[in-house]
Amino acid sequence: MAAPSNVPSNASSDSASLGAYLRDRRLRLDPMALGFPAARRRTPGLRREEVAQRANISATWYTWLEQGRGGAPSADVLDRIARALMLTEVEREHVFILGLGRVPEIRHQSPAGITPRLQRVLDTLDACPAIVKTATWDILAWNRAAAAVLTDYDALPPKERNVLRLMFTSPQVRAANPDWESVARFVVAVFRADSARAGAVSAMEALAEELCRESPEFAAMWREHDVRGFGEGVKRLRHPVLGELALEYSAFAVDGRADLAMLVYNPLHAEDRDRIRTLAAKMTPSSPPVAAGDTTATDER
Image (cartoon, rainbow, N blue to C red; front, side):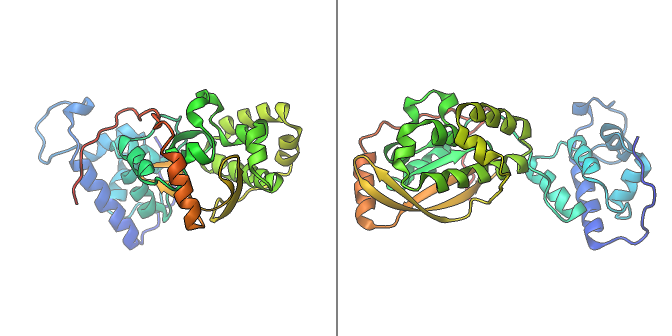
């Protein structure tokens, strides 16, 4: 079991907060549900040594952590404690902030669709193309405006719904971007940064190897090793029906799924907004996959 070597005796306020939070979560657990005997217990929840056993760390160290004098635990130890206490992703993030002063690294998850509620948010943006993408830039969901202005994703096999694949293998996407080279270079750099941040290195490398074989232009840009953040800006498109378009773009986090982002493209000109809305109304509503375990229960606040 892991144990501390040199534990500082002075406890910071964050150490005290971490200890109080761990104790509170421990007392909420059901020992029998986790395989521990239903012996007589003076307090509810798990014993400290039972949490330490589940986390494979020293019971003494875990006791010190709860008492606010265990020093700064490593990210690995906090991860093991979070699993031992059955913490949610938000609770795990809170533990990292208290224990290390930062959020944990993003856990890469295989795409599993979005919630119906998030799809309804997309659909509300009837004049603004909007998509939800993964860290490896697979497109999980979109609205009618995105299908009308960007790409009709419903018409593509799921594997082809990837921004990088479309950027480098679709003649239609290339023709729609008057400044294709600068856009492609930007997408490659953001893709590299997003994938690495999300811990999706193996998936990133697999897609990169595939595109290097298919596109010499991608191979050249990939060798530059540039990284960028998505940020905000203006995207210019040459649409076969609507003509020249200027769209302000912004990225938004998806709560509970740090590896996902919602990209929204807002038309700069009011007349373009009206024309997009009219064209989008003719598109078939999208039916992306729903995330496993999703519920539609309303949380009224």
